[in-house]
Image 1 (cartoon, helix red, strand yellow):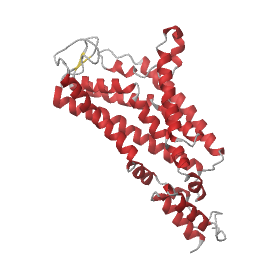
Image 2 (image 1 turned 90 degrees about the vertical axis):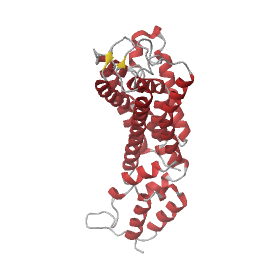
Image 3 (image 1 turned 180 degrees about the vertical axis):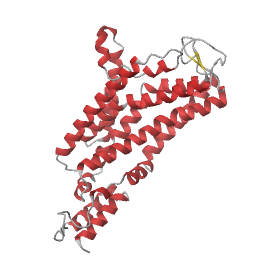
Image 4 (image 1 turned 60 degrees about the horizontal axis):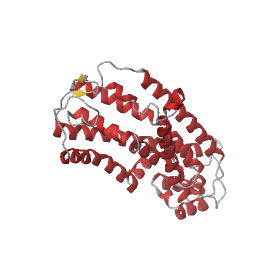
Length: 320
C-alpha cells in the first residue's frame, strides 16, 4: 500500500470515529510515515485532503452516541415531568393570577416553560454548556488520542473548530429541548392559556410563544461566555472534569458576587449579571436594554476566551 493510500485510510479512520482508539491511530500514523512522501503538483501529499478529516457530520454522530450526551439530553427531557410531579404532590393553584414565577407556574403552559427555564438557568444550563465545550480537547488528551489525531494529520485549527461547532450544536439541542418538552407537558397539564407575569401583565398564548422563542435565542447567546471559557480550559488541561468544573465554578462565583449589592455598578461587568434579562420578554411593555447589554457582554467574553483557546492550542506542545 502506498503512502497516499495509507493517508487516505487514516483520513477515513478519523471520519469513522477510530480516533478514539489511540493504538489504531498510532498504527495508522506509523504506517503512513513508513514510506517516502508522494508529493503532488501543488506541493501537497498525494491522497491527503485536510477538508476530509474530522468531518462535522461524523463527529456529531459520534458525540450523539456517547453515553454522556444521551444522559444529558435524557435529563433535560425528564426535568419538566419532575416539575409536574412536584406540583401535583404539592398544593399548586392553577387559577393563581399573582405571585412569583413558582406561584404562577401552573397558570398556563407558557408560565410552566418560564419556570423550567428559570429554575435551570442558575446551574443546569451553564453546566450543560460547560460539559459539552469543556470535554472537547481535554477528552482527546485524556484518552491519549490527541497526538495521533494531529499526526494523521488533522490541522489543529480544524480539530478545534470542528469540535467547537459540534459542542455548540449539542448545547443548542439541549437548550431548545428543555422549553420544547416543557411546553408540550404544560399544554397537557395546564392548558394553552395566557402567560401571566409577576407584575400582573397577561400575554396571549401566541405572543408568549414568540416571547419564549426570543428568550431561548437570548439564553443561547448569553451562555456563549461559558462556552468560550470551557473551551479555553479544555485546551489548557488534559482533565475534562477540570475544564468542566472550572467553567461551572466561575459561573457560580460570578452569581454569588452578583448578589453583593455593595459592588454596585461593578456587578454590571459580571458575565452572569444579565443571565435572566430574558424575563423582561414576558411583559406587555418589553425593556430591551438589559438583553442588549447581556448579549453584548456575553459575546465579548466568549470571543476573547475563544481567541485565547485558539492561540493556545495552536502553540501547545501536545504530549498525549
